[in-house]
Image (cartoon, rainbow, N blue to C red; front, side, top):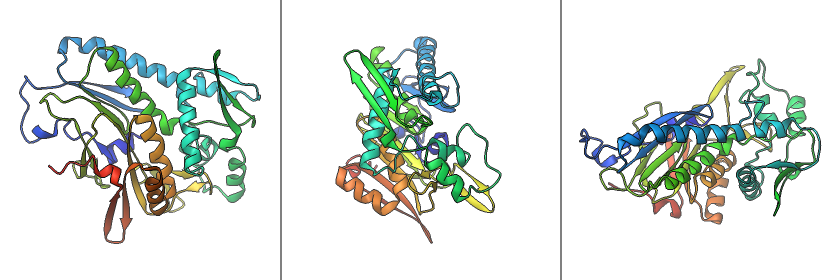
Length: 345
């Protein structure tokens, strides 16, 4: 769950950074709404919106997110995705346009990352205790890992789109699709579209570790987002960015983990090895046109590790910020595209 990543990586730095060191007057205070969804938290900050709209907007936001959760949840047995996972045939199954869109994006990023971002990795996620199943009592052996890996693979999943609708099809009956790695970005984009539908042009919306902004804050300045240092001090800021209307998402490895057989087990699973990652990359932040796209890329980069992530970011011209653990602390690297978003003040 990326709520850990929001607390650890993408920090909404006071929302209006320019006034973090002084109380805001009522005249410039944003309307802030928040709640829970998808096992994490959502937050919406609005500028220039009358507070009397708060109750109606809160209800509309929660309804939208509940609908998204009903589409994507692997924890709810009656969700659209769970029903697809439970289906053991190979006939195309009807899905919404939104579901087809998120899977199409996932498949595209999966190919570009050489399978590092794999939405069929669910059996391995469950095996290592980060899905609906309980945490394992022993470290999975190679036979268990191989058995789970045999149930995965992007090549077994297809999106079919025609003038009559959209379908998902699998040629491996037990294929298990897990969209949680992109669900927060998907929901964040939906909140942005909801704000536009409501005639709101100045907002910052976030679900878990995914954030998207438009317009300006209550002080008529750009919304700014802080990337937190990989420490337990949530106010320790690594860098501050002006998203300029883009989405941002961070994947990290240092908070969502557990100890098993004397070893730290990361929630980030490498689909190739079938095991949790062990390299020194601790976070990957991506800025993209949509929060969904950023949410997909950050996971793949996190799996790849520092050097391969750098190569991919340069090749694909991605806006990427990486933090790597070193013996004496941490080092950071950003792509040229990311540097354009960095704020120096």
